Amino acid sequence: MGYQAVVIGASTGSFQALKIILPYLSSDFSLPVIIVVHRHRHSNTNFEHQLSQFSSIQVLQAEPQLPISGPSIFVAPPNYHLLIEEGRTFSLSLEKPVHFARPSIDITFETAAQVYGSGLIGVILTGANEDGSYGLTEIKKKGGVTIVQSPESAAVSEMPTAAINRSAPHKVLAVEEIGPFLNTLDS
Amino acid sequence: MDENDIIEIDLIIQAIHLKYGYDFRGYSKASIRRRITNMLTKAGFDTYASMLHALLIDETLFNSLLKEITVNVTNMFRDPEVYRAIRQTVLPALKGRSPLKVWNAGCSTGEEAYSIAILLSEAQLFPVYQIYATDIDEQVLKEAKDGIYDLKKIKDFTSNYQLSGGLESFSDYFTAKYDHARISQQFREQVVFFNHNLVTDSTFNEIDLILCRNVLIYFGSELQNRVFKLFWESLSPGGILCLGSKETIMFSDFADRFEALDPTNKLYRKK
Image 1 (tube, rainbow over the protein chains, first blue to last red):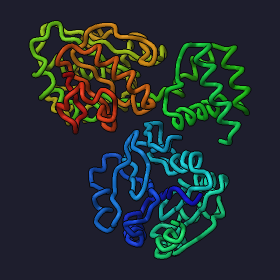
Image 2 (cartoon, rainbow over the protein chains, first blue to last red; image 1 turned 90 degrees about the vertical axis):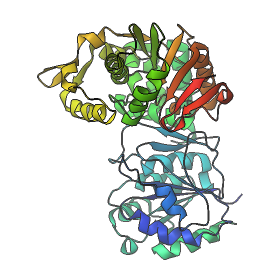
Image 3 (cartoon, rainbow over the protein chains, first blue to last red; image 1 turned 30 degrees about the vertical axis):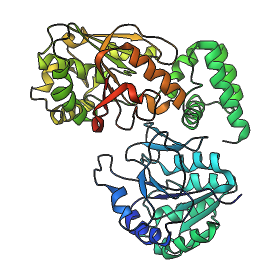
Image 4 (tube, rainbow over the protein chains, first blue to last red; image 1 turned 120 degrees about the horizontal axis):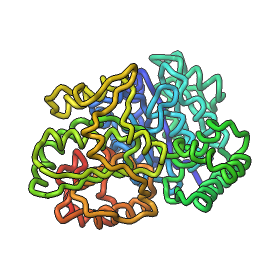
């Protein structure tokens, strides 16, 4: 069985990075893409709508009970942790922030690794925080593929650097190489 | 969490049910397992198996850790726009009910129940009303009854109150002492706090307005259906259900038994 889902975690600078990555994914990119970005808790800007402007895949906000299937891009809502459940649906939680972040990339990545095992692709992008490095390690431990944006190509390098140091990912790629690489994994 | 951890965590969930009657088996799995993990960290056990044993023989330990499983994040006038909608749409729609009965299910430390008490007092639409507020955790119920909040939180409460359309002097509703503020006796007398478990208990009264916000996000779909049934049975004809901002009745078996009164603010009316 091939890959079944992609999880992407990003913080500061995420919009610019996603703006480069997502247009590479064609409308028949079959894997569901789950994106966790740190946003202000009262953020009212419609991030999903903004992403949909340059993506040929539909962009939805992740909702509890929503079945996770592609082609779709799901974005974690602000102020809730996003978890992946066994039945391949989402659940939300208001537990306290992890690394000052809610949603926490670690929580989504860890629960996704639990469900998808070696069928998961994890990607850490730009950010000023170490969130995600634990989650990426969990993905690798379960046999999934791990990708980190190269710190030189990141708007803020802390998050990719922390992820590289902690998880020794399979690939460290410049931001414009990530989309094409994801395409090669979608069989 | 490896495969064995998951087996042991699920055994803890079973054990808590058998020993103490709290049934977390229908909760969203990934979410409840994570919170059991938090419990392990908090209590300082090395293995789930050792925590399982300790929980079985030590009820005090169990009670002290229950808070780790039930998420107690709340606020007064949380999501102010929802309270604005309750002020402007819901209460006028329920005018004439006497006594008006409100149930805050999963009340945690009481902030939302007291918010409703304040709304009802300001609205002056109902000569008689009763607010019931329930939770499964005795410890938070006790805190709710005391109605004492950290002074630091009052600033947040006040801003939410004003955003919800409140026009009174909010600080008049509290008595401040040192670094705490206590909600006035008037409101404490209007709310009856008691233990009720949405998973296992049944309806206890006919209710006109149910607020159950950010409780169902932790429940699996089967359990959600059980709770929607309980709410449907408890609501009076035309009674209103208010859910949390990421919760909906629309994917449930009860979708067609409610009409959306204000879907943005998650307000549903019993058909």
